[in-house]
Image (cartoon, rainbow, N blue to C red; front, side, top):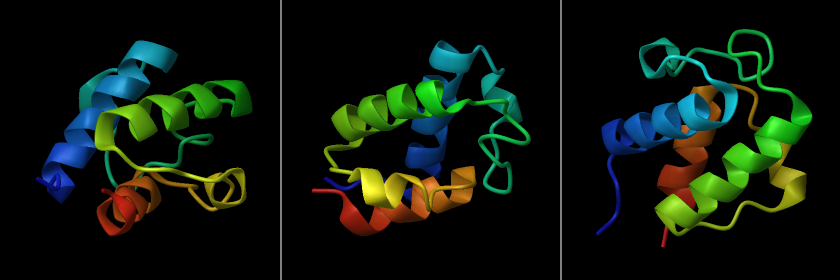
Amino acid sequence: MAATQEQILEGLAEIVNEIAGIPAEDVALDKSFTDDLDVDSLSMVEVVVAAEERFDVKIPDDDVKNLKTVGDAVDYILKHQG
């Protein structure tokens, strides 16, 4: 069953918390991974890999650079999840 926007946001919040140590409650749709959440490019790769596994979605490298905010990532996963 496909995850809802809320479930994806919660999952991404947990992933960002595990990888970058950012409190899950700070992860919101309008937050920028780099500017607001301090996720560097290496950590972003880890976030993407974890999200791919968790939500059964493939995120090609070319698409990762377009995922600037948490909302971008949530929308991408909503559209592409298996």
